[in-house]
Image (cartoon, rainbow, N blue to C red; front, side, top):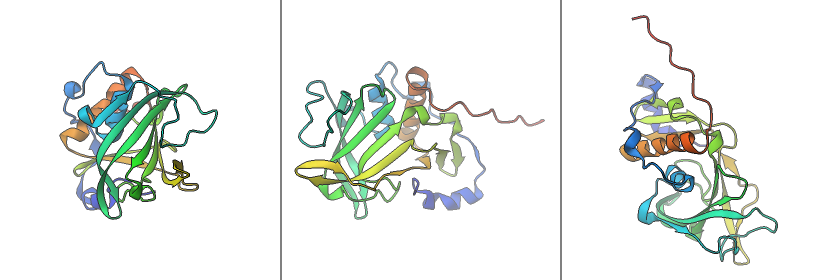
Length: 225
């Protein structure tokens, strides 16, 4: 499984001293008292404000696009996320994701790409994610204190089936999972900039208020001087 821009980080890794990711922009860098769904979307996509439309009605009507299997759990939250950075083998395109949560699964976010259809059966060349569906389990995510600094990037290993993706196809007018296309990340990386630090802080907010995630890492040993 490919990871987020790992090839570009190798040179920095060879000269960088590994250290815990401590230098985040502070506890007030992400809004407090927001619902889990809002904070989770921001962590997953880096999108907020006018880029996200939260739907309040007809959440379980099946929708005009994504296939809903009979007997599937009720949708409890749904939003449309506008994304101008969907990476394919031909560069970046703009599109829209449908993001949902299901009853009985309070710490899992599901996303399906609604448009453009030209991106459905492609791979994000930076992360290795399939451009189609995504599933992110917040109860499996590591602590922000587990991220390691490597040059200008922060990295953390992911437990199996934490952040998974698949490609999609359109059949009979419905968006469907492409069988056999599911893959899962083995790690996660963020470039060191303010927006990415806010996403890390959103994860901390989620851990404190909603989904605990992985235990905190062991403290670094103190030097004798």
